Length: 292
Image 1 (cartoon, rainbow, N blue to C red):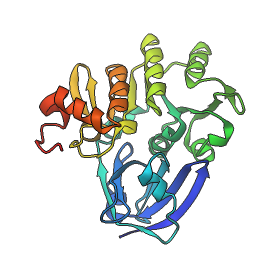
Image 2: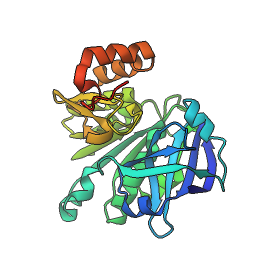
Image 3: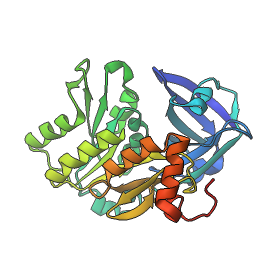
Image 4: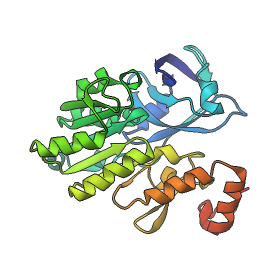
C-alpha cells in the first residue's frame, strides 16, 4: 500500500496528492508518469509526475476529476492509501540526458496549459537546480483555475501568466504571449508545450512558423499506460507511436494532432473502439494480440 501523506484541492476540480513511494521517487525523472489503482479491482489511471522528493521517498501527482476513477480519487484523504502506485513509466524528458554545458547555452521556453502546468513544473525545477533559467508561460481559462503559480515562480527564469478571459496576468491565449515575447526580441532554441491537445496543436503551428523546435507531451490521450489498449496510438512523422511507451514526449511539429484528437473522440464509446480495432488491425494495440 502507498500512503497519501498530503491531499488538497488546488482549485475547482483539480487536486494534489503527495504519496509515499520510495522506489518510484528514487528512480523517476521529469517527464515520466505513474499508474495508480485505489484497490485491487480499481481502474488503472496514468498520471504524470508533478514532483518528487528522493530523501522523503515521496511522489506528487496532480489530477483533474474527469471520469469515474478520478472522481473517486477525490474522496481520498491524508492517511489513506493507493493499492498500486506503479512507475516510473514512459521516457524521461530529453534534456535530462543532454550535456549540461550545452544545455546552458540554450534559451528554453515552456508553455503550460491548465493541468499541463503540473508536468511542466518538475522539468523547470530540474533545470533550475542545474543552474538553467527557463522562461515559462502558464495559461488558464480564468484566474480561479490557475495552479502552482508560486511554485513555478520560484524556479522559472521569467514567468508569464495569461488568462483567456483577462481576469489575471496577460489577456488571451498562450500563443499570443509567445508572439509578444518574440516581438519583444526574445529568441528561443526550443519550446516545450504541455496542456490540452488543442492548445499544443496551435502552439506547434505557431512555433513551426517561428522556426522554434517544439516538444509536446501527449499525456492527455493515455488510458491504459502500457500500450495494450491502443487509446494513445498516434502518428508521428508518418510512423505509428504509442504515447505511453514511446513517449509521452514527441517532436510537436511531427505529431498529427487532427488525427489524434479525432481518434480520441471515437475511442470514448464501445462502438468507436470496435471500429478502430477493425480499421487498424494489429497496430491498434501494438500487436499484443489481446485486444478485447
